[in-house]
Image (cartoon, rainbow, N blue to C red; front, side, top):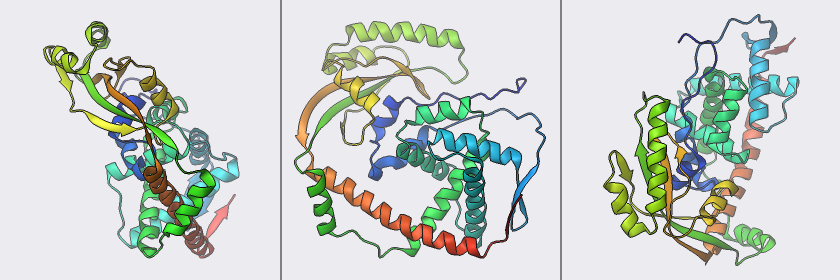
Amino acid sequence: MTSRRFRLSHMSSALSLSLNLTLSCASAASLAMFLAVTLSALPAHAQQLAATVNGDPITSYDVDQRIRLLRVLKQPAGRQDAIESLIADRLKLREMAKYQITASEQDILIQGGRDAARAKITPQQLGAGLQSARIDESHWKDHFKAEHVWNSYIGALNKTVEVSEADVQAALAKRGKGTSVTEYVLRQVILVVPLNAGAGAYDGRMREASGLRARFTDCQSGQALARAMNEVAVKEPISRNSNGMNDKLKDMLDHTEIGHLTTPERGPNGLEMIAVCERKSIKDDQTAGADIRSELLYQRLEGASEKAYKEMRSHALVVVK
């Protein structure tokens, strides 16, 4: 690429993302499928040695990158926080290599989605943060890879860790049973734009999308209108509830009239809109219980993870400059 500046491929909107799943602990995995980021080459940087981990160097540039990443993930981001985070990644990756535990590209993106959910941001916001903070691709991928392989290892070591029904009920009692959520029946409508299309193509499709929104007044006739257009995909209806859904998406769906389309947003395949076909309030004891079970299990495995990491860290040769 001729430019030295970072460039990011279009991140999927929170809208498109949440059609596949909500942001609850149980479903955070698919968030990351839209973290497809492309970055141009970085300029050369003067680097100083900040630390070594079993002889593996951590440079001042690594530390600067990690500070930026921790800020995007809304975690403590001092210099020492960044160094400790980098040390943890190096140790975890080296240890997991011994057991041949690896991570695919999809696994890495899934972990990024989980981190976005814990930071209470959408993948779109995470992608924008990575871009604006100028965090290089290899850096955030290495971090999410380290987290994924380590979590896989801890999960395998603690297969017997369970959360009892009594624990779930006790947590539900504290939270209050009988909570309600909104359930939606949704259809995704995509006006396809080729990946190599210029800005003009998006402008033209935006005009088409606006025209379709004006005529789309119910899901039955509206889908027929959409299917009659060139290069338009209409997905099958799906049911989703608001439990774990980010506030931006829920607000958008709640303020869209039944049978109408949401505002078009750019996604990985073109301009995306959501038809809100049904919307109703339902009781959510079962879903709340499942989420609480996931939260409690995560907390218990987190303790096992900290213990295992401390043991591994105690045997490492770490030198901080």
